[in-house]
Image (cartoon, rainbow, N blue to C red; front, side):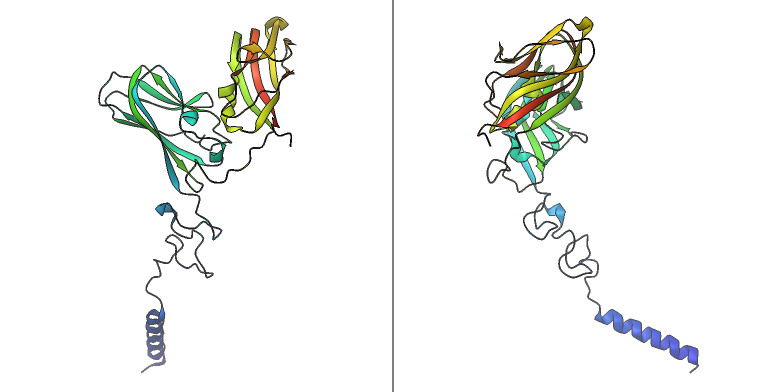
Length: 297
């Protein structure tokens, strides 16, 4: 046998021995399927995230991919209305940091044509017509994180839409949003950028800031960046329709104005109706609420 033939035979034999010693689950234990990673221990994904459970990347606790469904029963025709989904589903600050995957609207098998809109922070982010459909799925299109991107969440109907149920699919956390430990609310300054015009009207602050999520806080003052036509405008804060702050004259050019409450109203689910009374032709560029702890900490 020639030297080249001996080398080739040795290579074939070595390959066969290596194949016999290798485990048969080379792909089954890869990083995409759980099992052991190259460095030992569980892989980076731990248990497969697609199964809705298992351990997280840090090796402890449930992972952040668990899905929870919040069901809201309607069972009526909703005609040209706006439904506050966070309040109706009791989705408070314990959901902060979790992701809204979708809002599914189950329709009754009858009714006239209409449209349903998903509204986040006053802006329509998804819409669909109800005619001929039994189920409508709306996705928030990127603005999907409670607390940072979702402050207010509403379902608006245009026309007469017969709604049976609404289901919100929420991802992250350990499920069971109604109980367990809740992260304390940070009572601090929160701001909403705006670019809206109001002529002799009121600006609703409860929906703008979703005050229901700030349990344990009080509102010390409101600041706004605004201007008025010809500098002929005044603004004041209202609590349940009654003037409850100092009144400010607003000039022609954008500037910041602060309204201090005489008695600090509470935030949270029991917050009173708060609004800005805009007496003139206003352009509002931003509104800020200054929150303080109700306990004085």
